Length: 349
Ligand code: AHG
Ligand code: MN
Ligand code: MN
Image 1 (cartoon, rainbow, N blue to C red):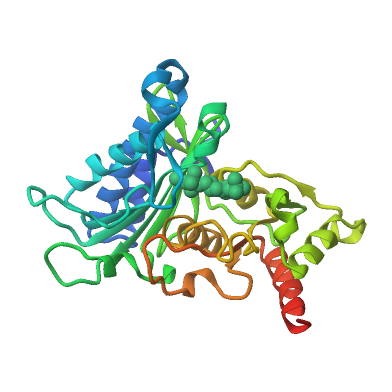
Image 2: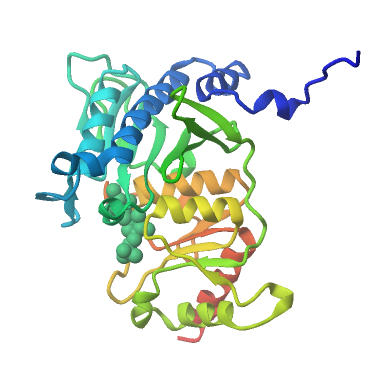
């Protein structure tokens, strides 16, 4: 009887996220086990939020609609924003792995209560991304970013949360869509995706070693803002819309309005997502700390690029917790082409 030789990839599929995190650790990529522990706490919060997102329509009173409060950005805070934020904070503050947290939903840094041990890491998060899509059943997500603290001891500080993105230790997102997918990478690792199996409650490896295509044929931008775009931005979009078989043009346009969804599609299929600077929002809309940096870390690990139109996102030194940045992210050849159009425009001004 021929022996049953399992290929390496056969061995991988079905691996749980918890096992994968442990294997990454045994490869000395996360030697202490503390990062493994933190990632495992995040996946627990993700499962809880996934369950609530998927049944929010049945608990509309509790989980849908507005809370009646606004966040630091002046945006209406949705009930599911608040629920997700509280879930992450309550689980992570007692984990013992964090010295301080930053969240889109909290104006200032979130201290770790004295009753809990302070840890060596700090975490930035967008607990629920794509809030405008919550009530209409369109996919939404969570984004997180992990650094080692820079302050020596005691309570973590704002300075711990204002590090450039290239210092990230790990980053990831959870997409609550047709299925719940957990994608993460670590400083020494590749990009891997796990799909939640509702029957076992386990995240199982479904997208090992994600690599973004060098070039795509999809562009993603809110065309509703086109009257406020720069001339270079308009020229680039017109270039993508022109017909040329050799370069796969015209590109398809896809825009979900949840960054996590638009990014996940770009990561798997290639192309480019843009939230540019425009007359209305000179710094774009997306926040550097908990939207752009984690996704830039992931896309570079997958072979892609992320810049603000001219500068690498991961090199930007943040000055405030909620600062915004223009964003061009995706396949390297597409991001480079966008940069070329913007640079030409800047030269001709
Ligand atoms: P959040 O819900 O966390 O505030 O993020 C919303 C962001 C992002 O998810 C999305 O790409 C962008 O807002 C969409 O903005 P527009 O509606 O202006 O296109
Ligand atoms: Mn967001
Ligand atoms: Mn959000």
